Length: 358
Image (cartoon, rainbow, N blue to C red; front, side, top):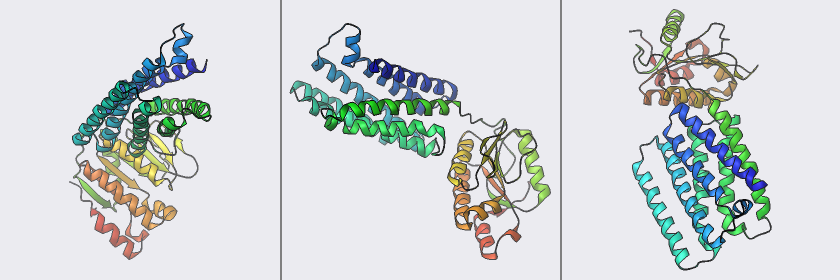
């Protein structure tokens, strides 16, 4: 019975990954969905499951098929991870992963021809798959999914499942094997829950790609210019606002409200987030920038300084600036010099230019 449940979990994971790819058309998700399909095929080749259908295959014939599936799946996951981390630009690394796949297949062939023991046959392919699962989990955390969300169960489940695969050649014939098999089922449930939440995340592209603001990082002191900037963002549907003030109006662009009162989505385009969750705030803002939003406005940097200290708040500002400028966008900090000491204000002015309307 457990084998059937395991197979159902594999097909559910594949369906959800395909659905995510169909909605977003992300190349890395296409690769992950292909890997999950191969994982489903590998599940079909398990002897206990096949025996439930009245078949009794020779284990010596099934094992080479299983490790071949593992090798192909591992290579595809490795390429997906490299695509995520390097945004599809590291062709040498992808070429190297393909070369590794050829070595792995050659390893399987030699083991079969030499009648190597099962533990030797599975040692490299299964461990390689485990490494690839851990790597793609790490890449998802680094580029796509923040740690303090339900979606984090997706990469976390992959990492834990990868650890089991790495230990498989050693533990497969030990008494602990049945417990690890059960733990693998739990980790697959984690993947399903995480990917289901991940599928529901919607990062909308801007309504208008171009916005008439020079590229770079700026500070702004004039309240009227700040209001005009928000109006321009609202009319174009382009931009990201990080603010301390409760957003009473409706906005056509994403807004992150800095508060400790609540968290999560509170409106169509409004997400409440703790001022101390700088990593999450940076990750969410970066994802909107990568989707095409070309302007980030911060109103409430003083609050970030109070909650995190000037050094940590400044590290966040510099990291955000680098992400925005790298994409050719604009960062505008609406603030007042009176809110800082002279030394702190000089540091801000070294990183940001004074905003001058075009």
